[in-house]
Each structure stands twice: as C-alpha cells, then as structure tokens.
Length: 145
Image (tube, rainbow, N blue to C red):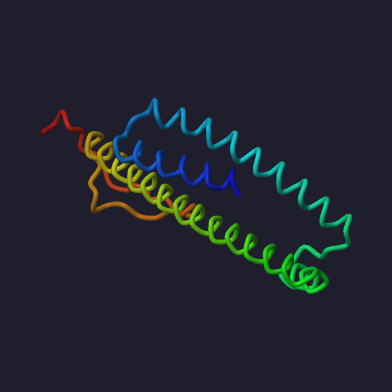
C-alpha cells in the first residue's frame, strides 16, 4: 500500500512537471517511478508466491474463498485492507492515464508545429496503416513565404 501511495504522489508531481514542461524534473520523476514500479513488481511477485504456497487462487473468487476460511474479525480486517489497496490502485491508474493524455497532447502539438515549420499543409494529412498521420501533398517551405 505504501508503495502505491508513493507512486500516486510521484504521478501527481509528474503531472505538475509535465504541465510546466520541466525536462529535468520529468527525468528525475521517471527514474523515481521506475524504481517504485520495480519495488511494486517485487512485492507482487512475493505476494503471489506466498498466496500460491498457501493454495489461494489468485482471483477475486479465490480471495473471497480464502477470507471465508478466516475468523470474522481477521477476514473483515483483511477485506478492508484489500479494498483500500484496490481503491489506491484505481487512483494510481487514473493519475497515470491523465499523465499519458498530457504527453499525447504535447506530442500532437509538437507534430503540428513541426509540420508548420516544414511547410506541410495541415489539410493534406491522412492516416497511414500505423494510425499515424502522413502528409501526401507537396511541401511549401517556410522560406518561400
């Protein structure tokens, strides 16, 4: 849970850095994210191994069956913690999607500006087989203006 909370905080900081277009901050936060994601993966692998060793099926049904074998107070506490973990994971995923959208919009803006500088007519953009836009018209260089 602690790792996911740190990742959520890092993603929020990353959003701020992306909005400011602070390359240095983005690079630092990317390194921090990478480290956190590695630790989360290690945590998941350890939890997966422990649950498998206990014969707990790694699914929501398997988790529910496991909780039903525990005394009520322990089952309730584990269920509460599991729900908090799930909610935190959902927030992290949403924050990550917001950052991805910011990055995509920045890329689109950069591509449009480059097209203008290269003299490509924006009305002549078509989508290629990869889903990216391609220019098919003759180019007018900015120097001809």
